[in-house]
Image (cartoon, rainbow over the protein chains, first blue to last red):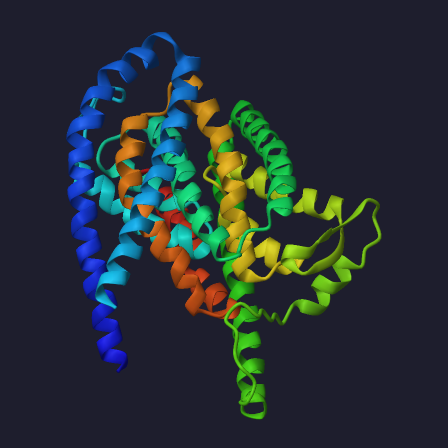
Length: 81
Length: 308
């Protein structure tokens, strides 16, 4: 019984990782590619604005990714049960 | 992948994997993990100033994810977190000033290295002794209380009598921390604990979770699970302040931090969820190697002259 449960959790986790990796790869090439030029310009010419943008970006990404991973976990847990 | 802000070429997979590993550790122990992230970023050629600033930015993101998850599990004391953030920021400023003083005196490396080795080894030794003693007492008691249901969050400590004595200190104003189960404690004790944490953060670098988390458990009497969650919440505020300060000095490559954070976001959730399956003394015992790794890194730096 325990083995079945562990296998189920592991399977859900592997699927979640694969889906997550797909999303993140898209994110690397789309979002970060477009942001890099603009952020470099801010870093060179408007340091205070860059500092504020940096904190806002990392907090926004954290909130979005937390929601994405929670949603993936809920969805996969539901499917495998 | 080329990161134009710091002018470095780093594999995004490497960054995401490092973020993932540090994320698990951060979510489980409530630490920033800068003693691993800093050397890991240096290892791929990032300058020290960028490694320190970028790591702080990544810590903010990771702590948001882990603290949100811990909050959902009921492991965050918001009142305590806000009070501690004030003391931490004050302490960090004093720590940074101390570093400047030592720099002027010309012996900053020796003093900082010696202090950090003593502190790291002392924390580990004390936690081994305390967690082992607590587990032994629990084991002896177990056969008699087998019928009772076990709750992983119910915390015990062999140091509890000293913690109670600290809580009984009547230094006005006294405040209650109902979420943490503390009926009354002096505000000054909380400020002092967070100030010391901040002082070490400013003095030795990083978030100093390796000293703040044990102090929250042993001095303030906060249950381990709540100490981990609250420490992470408090780190969001203090690391944001540090990130802003470093970004103004041009030391943050936010693109690297964003990529690292993609791995940390999932790792931090796994770490936070994993705390539910371990009792407080076991989490504290598993914490022991972390300060020792920090001490080993400092000793290596002292002996070889290379920073890793």
